[in-house]
Length: 249
Length: 249
Image 1 (cartoon, rainbow over the protein chains, first blue to last red):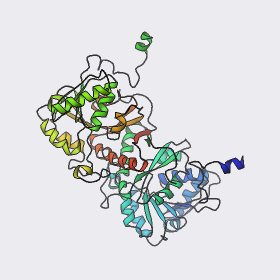
Image 2: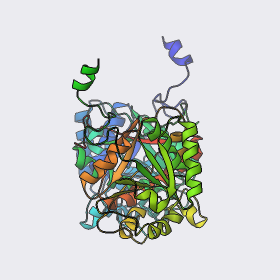
Image 3: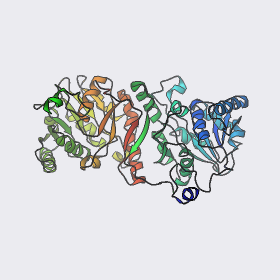
Image 4: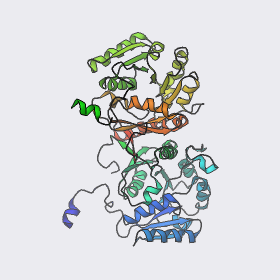
């Protein structure tokens, strides 16, 4: 059986060969004390990934890590202040509320290393300014992701993802079967984010276009909230007619 | 078997009871000579619906109707100049390119009857101004649908739909399995559009929110075009976790 497992073609949710193994670097989640960050941490912990949770206050990060370990016994998860957390792995997920995005990125300016990838998951909901969660606000740069790109060093690349996956659904035990739309200017960078996202069983990463496409994809959160209210659910998005096979190879 | 068919609970794609029968009023498609209008006409014709195709030039409308009859033998479809076409049925679909939306609605101003419903399917793609089809332009009213609402009498209601369904896929014979996101301010109006849309086998109508939500849903066309280029396909959208049952009753 082992030989068979080694020789078969790798499946979508297999660990990427030669990239992440037993000594894999952890996945930093900045804003990991929030709902989306917690949900991602739970799912990645179940997939055997190492996680680092970042928060403004290290004690809150440590509490969140403890909560993940309680939910997923044996989880390899630690909590640090944001800047230290961001330094722990090559692909950093930013899951803070939009109202905290700018301040968080300002505080991270000295923390980045050349070649790191930032996966921005923030959404400019009008709720950030005490407006409705079914509306968005205009970001000067075009999108939260483009604001993130402006606020990070040139040596750090930004892609945008995870705007349509429900945080409560991630935090539950149930199966997932939905897509994650990824925006970014280079396919190779999007592929790195896709590889981690597809470590979560039931998520398929879709190449939605250049980073500027985040202007559209980020607003989907507001639409999903509108649908969720009407159907009393936590909907997800799945694209139809996507050809089989690994687009990211 | 007939008795069984009559007594069973109506299914999603059954003709709406008591609303559209053998004497059903036709469905006007303004811009029915374009790709989306043609695709809708083909599918509705197959479902046994009566169709009226509108065009600026009556001879072009007649040609398009003839094309539908060739594709669907026995189809009940006629072609008229836009204003006459729009007067033929209670629920009018507007499928012109965005560049023609304003002019078309200006020319229709005298054609409307109280209580008609306009289903706006136009998308403000930047292609309307020789820009990219993966970008949109800002519409002063917020969306093409809201512009349509401003340009129609108060006694005519506007809803917005059909921005993510591929026109080429509609025009083909293959099965469909995707959602149509409908925006509008009253559920009863959206339900009328949903009823017609769900007459097309494989389409499920989703209540996406108020008409202002068209600002988001219309931009999905640009995102789908971006995905289609990358995957060499004609993708559709399907929401996950939508509860079973008829939301529109």
